[in-house]
Image (cartoon, rainbow, N blue to C red; front, top):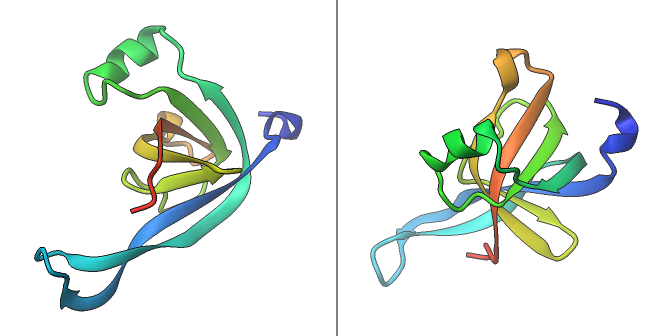
Length: 112
């Protein structure tokens, strides 16, 4: 991947428990914290073999975000690009080579 193709600045956030106490519906209070900031390529998910295979895991994946490898990026985290949030449905480390990660995401308003 050439550096010029990674032209979008993104922030990857992780959900963190704020306190051990439970809120009024029995869940731990959480907040989003910055996990990693990097350059990325963002594109609409294709309809080729990879998308068909991905539908077995997550049927509403609509965006693929490509970044350089960074350990610890997991499904359940979110990506912020400008004012748009993307929920990470699953992460693909192609051939386990630790060079690039494809984040298969759903576009959304993941503020909570």
